[in-house]
Length: 127
Length: 127
Image (cartoon, rainbow over all chains, first blue to last red; front, side, top):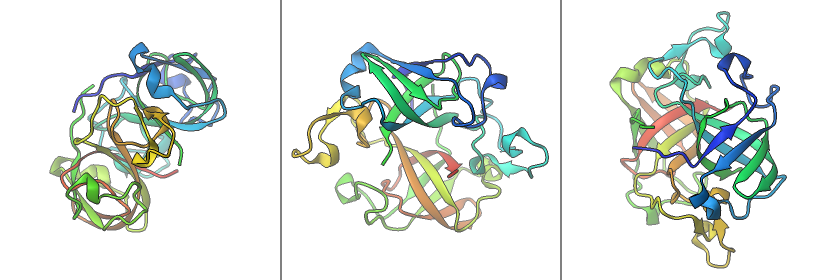
């Protein structure tokens, strides 16, 4: 099961310590830059749309099975599948964002907490 | 970016023609069977929880870039990122389901339209 990047995140967020825990907790505006051969796959997406962006959280620790949610020791230890921690066996990030603009292969979005350079692996409409 | 299965779907659905277009459009009850070494990662998930199941839709056509939503030619052609079609560059399935029971490494769920034998790659709580 091998994934290929369909695009990349361009964001002012450079490290995990700068990123909010959830996208709507203070993320800066960011861009997704898609691979040129996938231009057709964007057809129909417009400014104002709510979409789900899927990323590959390439700086995650894939060996973690339990964690304290939100990195707060006061929260009881939970199985990683009961948390949104980026550290998990397959570090897929799920980001509900609002599309602010589409310019060719570039999509500007609000509420994306992924770090600069993170690979994007899928985009789906919110249903 | 290589994913490993964290579990597998057990479902009466054997082929795409039997599966509803969305999970809540008539899916039978199904089980997810997790890999034994990931038992700890399930800690805290309980019957009644709403979770997001991520699958790898291994019978998808990864070359498709545009489609008529819901396979209905009356719907105008859309970029694949503006649809929920399983045929897409990285065929990640996203399934909001309700947990009906947990029995060790087995999780019984409602509203899962994935086919029998589909690899599961992640589970996250609904926020």
